[in-house]
Image 1: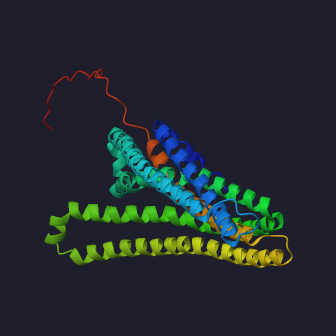
Image 2: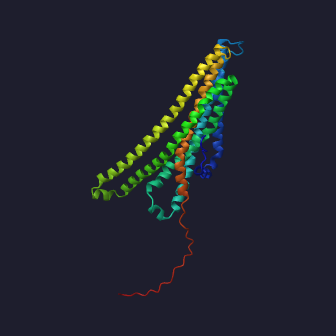
Image 3: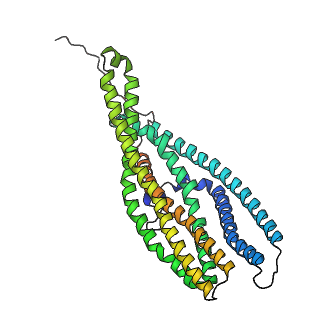
Length: 344
């Protein structure tokens, strides 16, 4: 990755994540098992192709291979079910714990803090920022190691079958990392601006609901509608820009990978014609090359989510860094009052 995902802001939130480390390790183990099973599929396809085409001596019955392959699919489906269940449950638990900690700190802050800030900023911390952090941990961060395992495993298998084709397959990696870097630089400020715009919109609604009788009494509905539409349009504009960049990232990575697969297909057919490669091995190579695209897309999403999560992490750390109101120990001594009254 071009940047370290655990930036200082995210590292400061580790105490709220580590209590769930056992479940997260279980999820990681399930994901790794799924990655290993995904690496078996291209190999099974190559064996089946060789068996059907009777390349060399047929050692395995195609029907037996299909039965084994079906069993692997069933096992992977069960792993996927368990993974999704644990991810969803753990994500909600992390969100609830972080919200509880934020609300506890919220009540400990002095009144002066809220007089200087919009209520929407605080509501955004509880409703959006906490969910973004937990989603990054359960949906993004734990996917990193399985994606790397899938990528490394696919590359090793390709190199074992034909090292020249494997080398060509990774030539497109520099273009991939450059693309992530350029897009990531645009996503991070947009993410922070989106959170701020959402806070402003929530603040406008909260203020208007509190002053609704006065707004109706002075017929200020049109003015307040204009304020809301302005904040709403700004939020929509930022959302559109953010999703446009995010939507372009994965197809761009897939396009780079598709061009690479076509080049690999051309090289593979050349090697078959020269007798350097068997047709079944070409099937296996192409499937491994296509398998490389899944972790690449995951890594692209990871980088984009890191940029998006940084803004929320910075806001939460900044909020938790506010000094709470001094505790009253009950030992305050009042000065004696003389009680003299003067009329002037």
